[in-house]
Length: 606
Ligand SMILES: [Zn+2]
Image 1 (cartoon, rainbow, N blue to C red):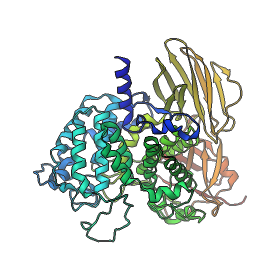
Image 2: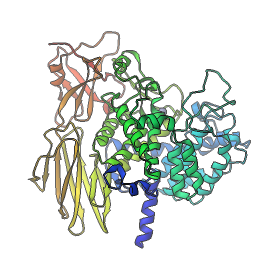
Image 3: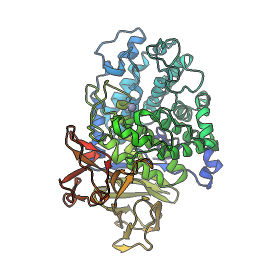
Image 4: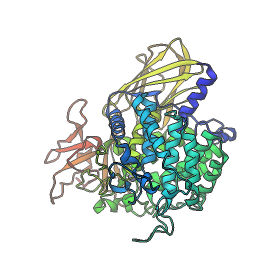
C-alpha cells in the first residue's frame, strides 16, 4: 500500500475516539506548554489483548451487540417517525416514549464499529451497515424523533458518535450523508447552549415544554465530525455547546464540582480536552486538568467517584459519610468510560503517568468487575461500597451504563499504549501483542503478565532488523522498589515511581524487558474526616473483605492485622488474614460475584 494512503488510513482508524488527527492547533501551540505534540493513540487492531478478563469483557459485549434484534433497536426511531415498526419493545429506558428513547443506539453503533476495527469480523461490519441504513430510513426533515423528547442533544450526540465511528472504523461510506441528515433534523430541537443535567427538571413535569438535556460531550463528537467531514458547521456547533460556564471557573482553579452530576461533568471534561487539541485554546486544557485534580481529590481508593451520582463538597467528609448507607457509590460503566477517555487525553497531552495510574485503578477496581449485561437489558450500574455490599443490576433495563460498557471494553485496545516519534509508551500492563511503526519500521512488543495479581511483567521486542527507539514504561507512584532488567541484566538506576522509565537503545529481535512492580500492601483512609475507615490495597488493587450476610457487623481489625494480608497461595487472586480470630478472606472487585463484601474496613487500635 502506498505510504500516503496507508498513513491516511491509519489516521482515519485513529480518529473515532481521540481527536488525534484534528488540525493540530494544539501541536502548533506546543501542547502542554512543553513544546511537544500529543502522544498518538494506536489503532484498535494494534493492541491485541491476550486471554484474560479484559478480553473476556470485550468479547462478551461484542457478542451481546451482535445478537441484538435489529427491529427492536429501530423501534423508537420508526415509531416516532410515524413508520411501521415490526418487532418487540426493548423495555426499560430504551422504549419509544420511555426515559431516554433509543439513547443507547448510537453508542451501540459506535461499539460495534470499534469491535469491527478490533476483530475485522465481517458479520459485525454487516450489522453496522444494516443499522445505519435502517436508521437512515427513519430520518425525516421535521425531526419528529426529537419532539416530546427529554434528551434531544444527548441522543443526537450519541448518534453523531455512532455515525462517525461507522464511517471511520467500519468504513461505511453512507454514514457521512446520514450524519448530515441527522444534524439537519436534530438542530431545530437542540437547546440554545450547553444544557446542564436536569437543571430545569421538576418531578412529573411536561418535558415537551423544554428539554431536560445533557449536551456535555456534544462538542467532542462535533469536533470529530468536523475532522471527518471538513464541514465547519460541526465546529460551530461544538463552539456553541462548549460549557464555558463550567470550564471558565475550572480553568481558574475554582472548584465548582460540588452538587454537580458526576458522570456528566467528568465526561464533559473530555470536550474540554478535545477542544484544546482541536482549537488550541489553553484554558480548555487548564479546565480539563484542574477538573481531573478536583475529581481525583474526592475519589474512593478504587478510583471511583460521585456517591449518589454527585460530587461532594471538598473537605466535608462526604465520601466517608456515604459509606454508611449510600449503596450508589459510583456509576461504574459510564464513570469508567468517561474516566478512561479523559485520562487518555490528559496522558497524551501531558505525558504525566499519574493519569495512567488513575486509569489503572478504575480499570481493576471498578469496570472490570461489572456484571455482564444480560440479553434482556439488565445492566450493572452502581458499585456499592457500604459495609455489606453486593453486586446487582439497575432497577430499569437498558440504562446509560448499557451503552457505555460495550464502548469501554472496546476501548481497552486504545488505552494500553501510545507512540511518538521517539518510541512506545506502555501505560497498561496487560497481556497483549502490540504492533506499531517506528519511523518506517514495523515493530512489535509481546507483553506477558499476570499483573496486578503478580508483580512481574515480561516484554519481548519484535523487530525485523535492529531499531533504535525508546521504550517508556509507566512506573506507578506506589511502586517503590521497582526493578527493571534488560536481557537478564539490571538496566542501571532503579526506575523511579511516578515516572515513565525511558529505555533508549538499539533493540534487537527477542530482546527481553523484565519489569517488577512490587505490589506493596498498604492502607488508605477514605478521607481525612474518617481516618479509621480504610481501604486495603495491594499495588493498584483494592482488596475487599468478604462478609457474612445478616445484621451482625464484621469484627473490626487492627491496621497491623489488615497489613498482614497474604495471598491464599502462590499466584492466587484471593487473599486472607490469619491473624484475626476468624480467618478473613478478601477479594479484588473482579473476583466478587454473589458474595457480600466491604470495600472499606473500620480499624481499631491494637
Ligand atoms: Zn450510566
